[in-house]
Image 1 (cartoon, rainbow, N blue to C red):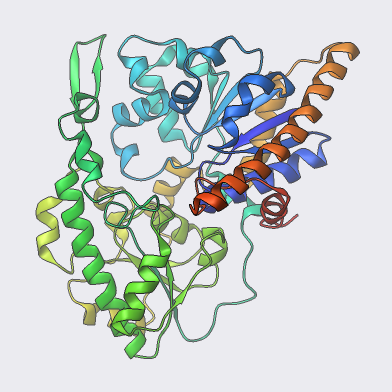
Image 2: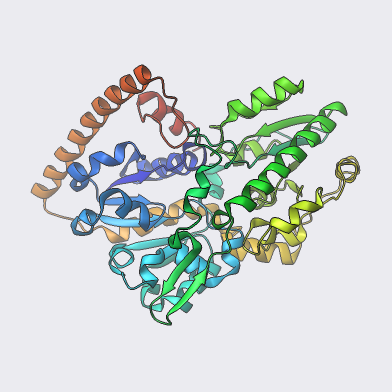
Length: 445
């Protein structure tokens, strides 16, 4: 069996790709890494693969239109992010998994997907309620980045509390270098104003997500940046060991430049290091409300939210922002920086109580997600039927032709990028031999 696995964000999805390759290798199968650059080759080489794995259906028709619907390859979706506030509204999570087109009457895209790998039972329940006809294609596998092989634990956490800071200012500090005005392009777009126009009930579900309100999102991110800088300065001044992890959709160099200009010396995490590996060396993680808090709690790290430090922030937040996800009820939210530092000094922790465990179990299938990638492989294996020797030979020939073409393609692509002086980032990068080796080293066997 040969699998094409799309890496949408290297810093986020690379670890899953790495473990899946190990799993397939142990079972006599192969995995090829793909991304937004290599996608353009698939219309010519799709027959080389038995299974193509993508995060969401919309990426398939955004890239290839309707061409992919007639390909003989099996299609599997595995969400890149599927915990947090979106799971609070069953209609919203169903729309996220199946896309708006499904609820607006264009069902051919979701129906073409052969299997949906879900993170938790909560997501499956949403499908059972709003799209029961697709329930047989839904498989709960768990949070893929918390497969046991994705977690490379440090030897031990230091005696003195080590603090990690996470940022989230994607509108202000976009990794593509887009203007802060760019989010306003969708301000009058009905597609972003509503989750969907439900054909069955003729209702329009208004979007309450941050992306639908760019002015509010920028206001919140501005406040978060101010608070983050003040907190870093305070903790460093106390002699705390602080590491900053910049959001994968931000430009990390800008954070480094700003903090250096202010005069704050702080360590930055390697943006390519899996978040589970980074968290395993921390005692606390501090930042605006984030799904990263789920990762932290599952690894025994205590999250601290900065959402209440500036009360102006509350007036901009809607109900489907991460401030209101199910885990946030249990997260410490200080109103003063002095309260935050006192909490750390007293060595307070978030306890894995039954209510916390219930949230993680329902949304991420924790702790059973430790075998999530094995389940993904087994689902793919069930979809693939054995063919004749002649057919398999032709498929093998096409596969190696793809491998050779892919290497030549990325060699030329890198040359063009170099002369164009455009930098690679977590989403747009060359999958050359060096990158492949890096990905393969991310996981442990």
